[in-house]
Image (cartoon, rainbow, N blue to C red; front, side, top):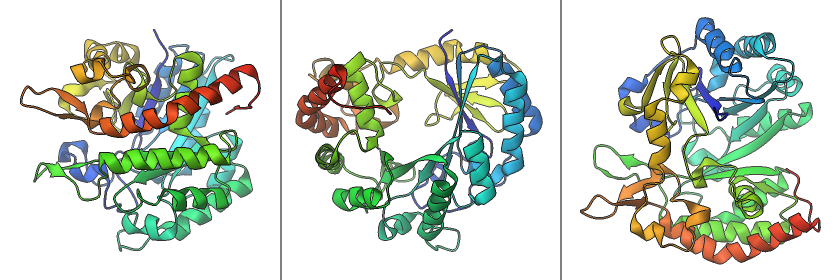
Length: 375
């Protein structure tokens, strides 16, 4: 069995802030609302059965909603159970994606001591972040997030930032890049926002256009390239360099198959992907079926292979090998024959046309030892 990572939602969709673009707002009520919490019974079953698969590297990615709503005690129990059930030669890798509002000194000490990699959501400077990332009183979250980042630095917590590119910040690439550089944030992710309004069937107002995303990627690449690729890690760019060096991506967006992880909800129910938490992509419950069987089920295998179902336009594209049709959640119908292509197809084409020669140059320097690229 090929190793896979667990993407775990211990508090389900529950969150302590009210981001206006949150994708849970457009999801079915069946996903769950209100207070949702993983029981210690589910947690122990999950940890025990996953580690029994005896993978060398075992990835636990804790996400939400907001996973810190579980409380620090829950995550101390996570670590205790991992240490109890792992073999001596098994490596545990924990990551935590959070809005960081609850990260006080106790949290940060714990995260540092237990080598958690923390992803902190922030949409750039205050004027950009506080446009959509607000609490339930419509107050901005920027000041609390920056205070949490300061505490993470003080305690030596490994962290990166995750920025959702929306209609309010996507055309301000230099302001975003300069903000992260000025705040000494060296590990960055940028995720394009595109959501459909289920009532209207139209792209939501806060989404970005393919042209905007293509322009952003090209502009970000120029700033990154000029600043020094070895000084700043941008997740998508690192993956492209990995592809240039080894033929393999480090992110699922551009991978050949969607098979790198499974989603575990707070109830123990499992799904193929975080963006496809609905009936036909349900794998079962860890109390009814062993997690190894869930990961190898026909539903999961079919889902993984679906990424290879590409329109003819993709099959003749010069960037097929590096792109592989992008993320399946962004694929939309393009004609009456129900053929689908990625919403950001033109974004990626313009970006790869613009950047691939220089990506190849960077990769060549890394391979020859002329440039350090140790992430």
